Image (cartoon, rainbow, N blue to C red; front, side, top):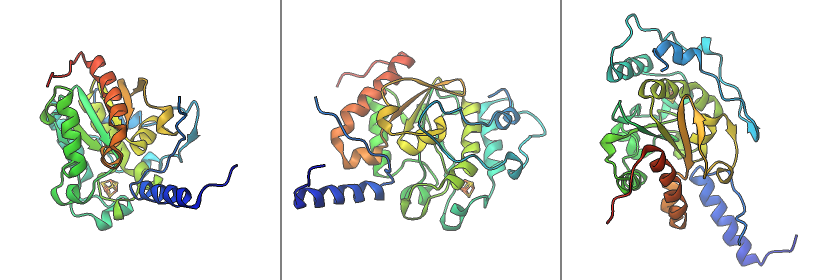
Length: 264
Ligand code: SF4
């Protein structure tokens, strides 16, 4: 491999450090040129069998999680989601509870056709108890508006519901402990399309760790919904050049939903 100019090498190292601080751990080289009930949601809580890429560590056995069967099946999505929130309670199931202020359950319409999944709460989200309310959230709001939708019309949740220290990427133990609640939420909302925001969301929804480049630009399947993978808004804030590619991903979602972009 040819040796790099020291200045270029230093710049590259700084950039990699910066991306790792953002939680981006997968890099690639660009080549130029309800279930009907909540109970069933847990019963089907298995990762899709990885076809390629590196499998992520297995989930904790389901019996380590608390019982989730409601006495009476809820009759509407909002009530079903409320039961999931009650199951979570003042959760101490993983280490992330130690540093949180508020559990960030979700935001949006329980009957949404489109559901966004991010990685986990940041400082603003932890303070307010709502997902995507900081700068990245503002960008996500803009992305949603560009799709011709309002934030209140979609559903937004994260892989983990408590803020990881220093906004680090959730550990597999943490993500595997918390994500069954997300899967139950997805099974209740039953969106037509899910957009995974970033590598962590894509990893825990698809059950395989793979660079985003290999997952973007096509339609995956997850628990009966179409799944599209794109960049996390926090990443787009730091590298706005990728917004064009993110918009191409969102346009796939729009096509599946029969949406047309609003003309400015
Ligand atoms: Fe519980 Fe999820 Fe918070 Fe961990 S991240 S303490 S599993 S709510």
